[in-house]
Length: 366
Ligand SMILES: [Fe+2]
Image 1: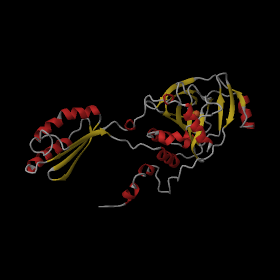
Image 2: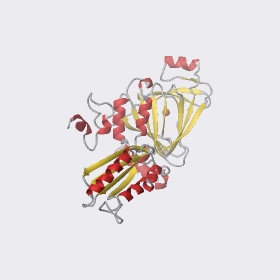
Image 3: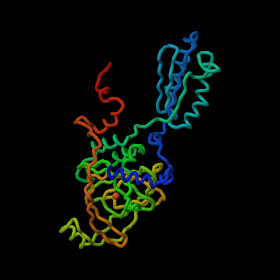
Image 4: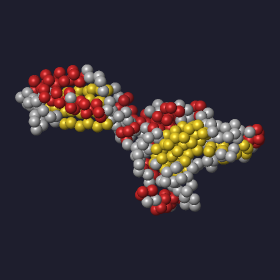
């Protein structure tokens, strides 16, 4: 049995169900735009097809010209005597206004012309729901990162684009639970669990037991993206303080063991990150330094992407001390094939999965 699975079993053995956070869960649809799709299907009575078609034609014209609170209108006409309206609204409130207004009015126009419904004016099919976003799985997020996060330092990264893709990850316990662990010798200390590592990045699931906190640290030349997976963490951001000459000289002579003092640490922002609100943050040395804390009484987990891998950092304390800390090189974890070939545009990973959309898109079917 691996030490990781052993850790996990011990972790589950010591965690009652209530020790796992449950408040403010992230919902799949909350990752989307909030738009609501409304589908209505009507079928004509066999002896009223012409009258039905005439009304449907007028309805389609009205729907196509709707602008307020509508983002898209499609009318599907499978055959004479059948129609399906697909209308996308900006919100549930807009849909509700439509159902009690225009829909009621045009169903009166269809009364007696359609074949289903108790009172002869209801659709044969009606369903509405929030538009489902193109959310990432953990695998598709990793594929995106592998294809798009490269370079020797944080200036090579398109931070905003990567942050947006990370926000589109919908973390499912079935995907990340295998990386949760605790240190049996020190169960109140946070743990670092390697999800993926290569020359461009480390992807780490950090587990934060109740009340635990990291040191105040910088990120050397790396970008650091953080997103909360379970529970909540606080990020305390500090301005990068001035370092004394003793430290700078020591760092030049022996970059791995420099010790010195720094100016007073100044907090510039404190943010609570949780699964239902602001989910993530980003840091690099041009922005400042930070510490991550779990101020709650339950376990919290967060995914951290360090690019390039963070092998050296400076640790600061409130008393004005600073020293260099060398991170242990992580063992690589094989998560499967990289996004293959030169044809990958960094978005193709989103299209793979249930069927081969790229193959479909390459075929010129007329
Ligand atoms: Fe950090």
